[in-house]
Length: 137
View 1 (cartoon, rainbow, N blue to C red):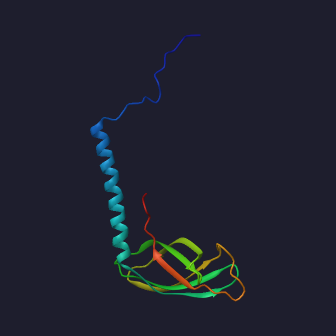
View 2: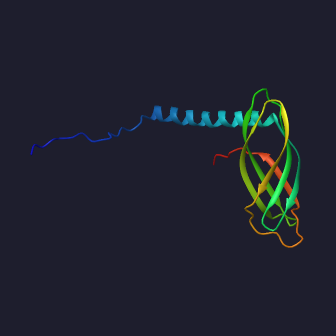
View 3: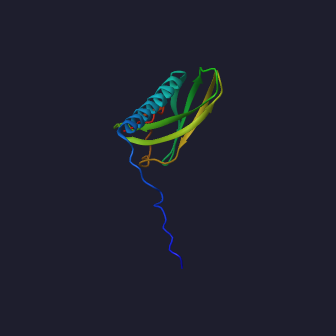
């Protein structure tokens, strides 16, 4: 059987220091651009009148009104959070919605995964829905 010398695959080359600096600067610029676009989009979104529509021992249903003032349709991520009267978080959910251009709509969100079940006669105390901005550590 013939002996075949093979090249090392994949071949590993170290990046030069100048190229490494350029890669880091490009990554930071990309993160900055993404944050700016999310902030600009969130300035044109208005969330009003968030309230608890119904609640049970294992679910909470929220109702909210949302307005898109932008000239084009948007897909945005929203964070819904609910607290009890002792300021302990009962539930939170991250979800995505699509909004038409220059429109206002009333929507509902069902939170069915609670951190703890509600006691008999207990109601959620405070609720909030906000535009979600991803944090980079």
